[in-house]
Every structure is written in structure tokens, then in C-alpha cells.
Image (cartoon, rainbow, N blue to C red; front, side, top):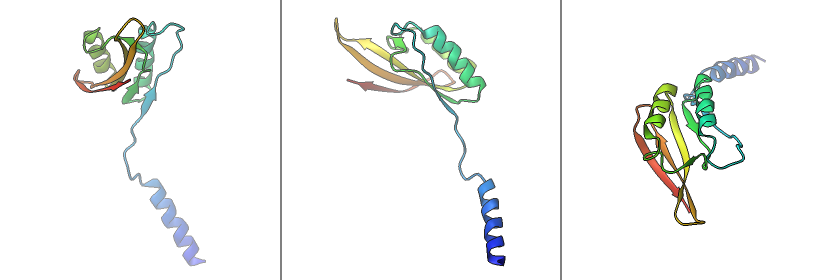
Length: 120
């Protein structure tokens, strides 16, 4: 009986001590009906996610037409700074009349593009 009480007590103590930090991530989804037509809505959702504590915010892979390192760069940097979060920005690049390539890049709160990942 004593062993059971000690085991339960130790379990409760260990349960309350966090062993790893918590990172809040938000994956944004919005169906605008037309590809890459909802950047303003994604901006609003990003602000809301940041207010809810997200420090990594992931945009849908077809949220932006064109590379955010080239298109609307200042606006995306302002959004990252304002939200104080890392933004994973999904975007599409046109390679031909009917050929598109999905890519994503990570933008830090300090305004630096950290990574780029392509998908065929």
C-alpha cells in the first residue's frame, strides 16, 4: 500500500514538471475559391494566430502567386515582424502555360528568409 501511494505521488510530481518546451504552431486554411486570391484573408488569419500564441504559422502551399522573396516582400516582412512569428509561406511559380511548381520559404520575425523548399 505504501509503495502504491509513493508511486502515485511520484507520478503526479513528474507529470507536472514539463520536460520539453511547447511550441505553438498554426496551419492556416481558407477556401477562397480562386487560387492565391486570399492573401488579405491569410494576413488576417496570421494576425489572429499570432494573438492566440502561435510562433510558427504555416500558409497553404497555393496561398501566394510568385516568390514572396520577390513579390510583396516588404509586406510579408512587416507581417512577420508584427506577428513576431516565423511564417512558412507556400507559393506557386509558373514555369509554363499550364505548368506550376509549389514551393515554400520560411520568413523569420526579423525579416530574414531562412529556407526554401521546392516540390515538383
